[in-house]
Image 1 (cartoon, rainbow, N blue to C red):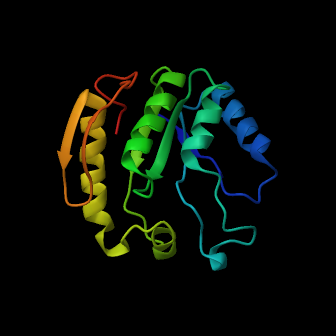
Image 2: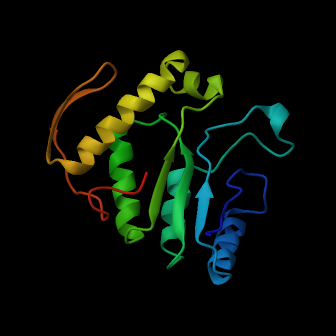
Length: 169
């Protein structure tokens, strides 16, 4: 059996240093994994502190340099970012962690997040399917020609992930 927990990457806790101290304590206690949520904001009625989240991928990148063994994951990554930029950020974190990155993906539920970033909320399931398909292509191939309903590109893309052929999903 393996044990992990979700870090409270929502602002309102003491500070980012608090997240770091939790991560280091979890690693020293032998936890297997740490997870962060991926939200831009939360409904104000859900929180007594703030509707702001520290960015999930930036949080993991920061934790990568301070931790040595514990797996770092997204629970869950939403299709809110440009997939080419996301692919590169994930590759960077994967290399920084020497393969300790795990990715969870999800469609999300808070319509306002999608609206603020110009992502059609009603299409988010189809967008996520295509998003993951494109990420896999970017991670596996140097030349990527992709013609989907939401994303089209023809590019040379490098570097590749540390984990082969790509991080665990």
